[in-house]
Length: 512
Image (cartoon, rainbow, N blue to C red; front, side, top):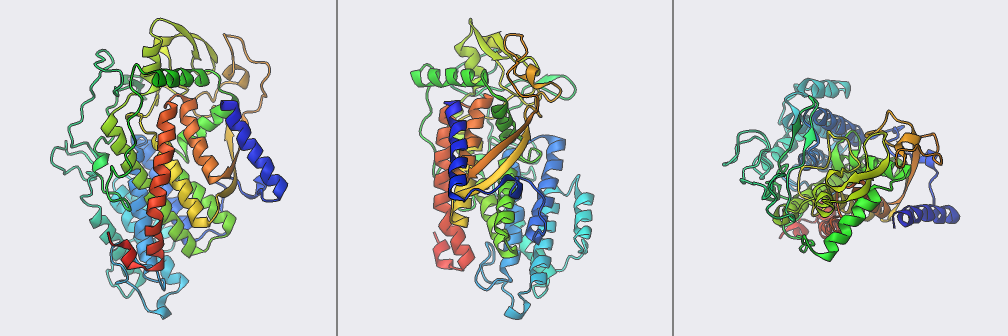
């Protein structure tokens, strides 16, 4: 099945080549530089770098990252909308609209610069305040201009950002650590979540339990359910978090779950170099900025491909960022509601007294291991995401973003190529012969080069690759991914008319 999936991607590429529609790799490389980036593209680069800097300090928090990116992109959109003939903003509608003579490229760029800057300071103004200020200066703007004059683009940007920030001030995220029940730390849980199971006390194998990580100091720790309260965060376009809640997952002891756990262990023990590259490509994104950052990078690929102007970039980044935010709110509702475990524990419990084929660790390849010691294809510092498995956030976010890009561009065609280095995040120090070793014997039938070229022919195929990577990596069972893909598409299809209404200034369509 794994080989068939990769072959399907290859066949799609051949089909494109045969019809003359395939974009050559040299023309659209994922994460390539832009020869003439729009101001929106440049500010997205700054947003992603600021987010990555935070991840370097505190670790990846996909829900928080998605919300932060949505806030910045929404502030930018609202500031830009004041200088468009039709579009309306999310907070003021058409109340900020400027006269036609003021709708210049320069005013649009200035307004979105201040909107981006103010929202970045609100979200990352602790450790990264000086860095963000420096970026503002490099872009040619005064970081100390606090004008709220709505007749000036600087004022429009500041006003738009302030309104979005205020709207999100108490949206359920606990950004400031001031929700009742919170421990006072930003984004901390205030819903009193406690896991049913502990590693040494399994009450019900269906339910989630913390997984041991090894910290930078070499000490072992088991993080709790990350942002367990996220189902309470206000979505952007959805009516409520449980609007597309997934059906019940397979229970422990069922034939379906047993089959899917066995499948996960089997594919994880037979990863090719290409599959390892895909696992890490979809796991990391651009410097671990999560699926929100990853799909905004894909949107930048589209921007370069289609030679977008500022207007299209602002709208596209706004829609993708907010759809992904909603997919995380929605998938976290399902995660919290069903509270399911992950393959890390399920494989160990399914094969408690057996030896199975499994990954033995960086540079050791695959061999017989005790089932109770099974480990996903991941470094010990980040074994498996610290939250329940059902549904997959990767799958949900990817399907939502992919469908949004399809709807925005009018086609599912993507045509990008990602160039990766197999094992870069997990076993970078080892040659391919050791990476692919079998039963202690170095592999002889693998190339020496670790460079892998991953075709991304369509948005849908890219989302499916993201979902499949979670099964291959050992983080999810198939149901987690399949239902996540379904949920993400439903969210995008439901939301798209609302984004169109914003772009076209149809206020009546937004009423609900």
